[in-house]
Image 1 (tube, rainbow, N blue to C red):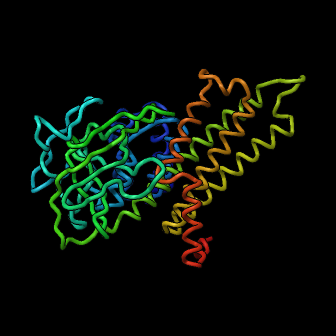
Image 2: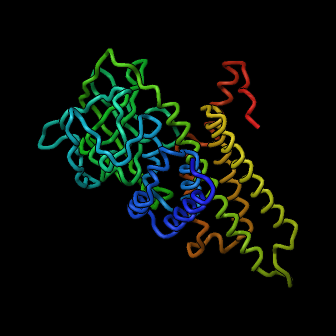
Length: 368
């Protein structure tokens, strides 16, 4: 547990890292700071602080890979994944237009299914494939010993030797170690190219599966932890948008006084703060409750709160908020994509409602 002076130092160090670097540079900074060790020792502090600061600074990293693999298997920071006792060779850069499924006309080496008890850990050569945008189901489909993949990856996946793909195999969920060179990777442009997401696809990869192996049981927990992490990132971005609008309202003068003096402006800022604090409170509850339902509710509320913040802050900023010279557009772009990762607010709310109707049972009261 990180607390007291250690927590203050940890927060200050992460703030400096997220304010001064992004992408691969931030990954290196997190490694130097020992963030993966903190994730193992105190997941709540490590996740909530980093992702909140990352959202507030509009920075990117591969931290979500660490979070997912920590939930899927025991965390061994920066230990290379081993298949058959030998480390996987380093990854090579893949041109955006190439099709690495076939090299020289022949399929790449077979992938390997990972038993749940194998203790696969996070390493410099290991990444993870995320679900497709808008969903939270496993990105892989394993049938007849062949694996199809349709998902996303963080920017760091292209530099990893091995990708972990969680896949449905009949009525079971399994984790598969796939050479990254066997996947087709395409940089996602769209609304927020600076986020660095990668589209990951594959079809017909050969996978050796033990039919008697136990199914993977950590996917639900991994999804819940990812949703909470992304919820903190959404809250961090929302707080920065609110701060940008607040500063503008204090400095912008109309009719002889700052626009912050007008009730309509105050109401929009107040409603934004209420939405942010509601989301933060439910994220805190998700850490205490540890249930997938609460994690999904927290992610949904954080996404909805972020859209509220974007809408109200844009109104307060008015014309300057529409320009690329003002930083607001970077946060609006970011929250639109983050809201879709691991389930958008609307789809998560609909799924929770469907579950309530099907089970005819309300979730237990949250701890106070």
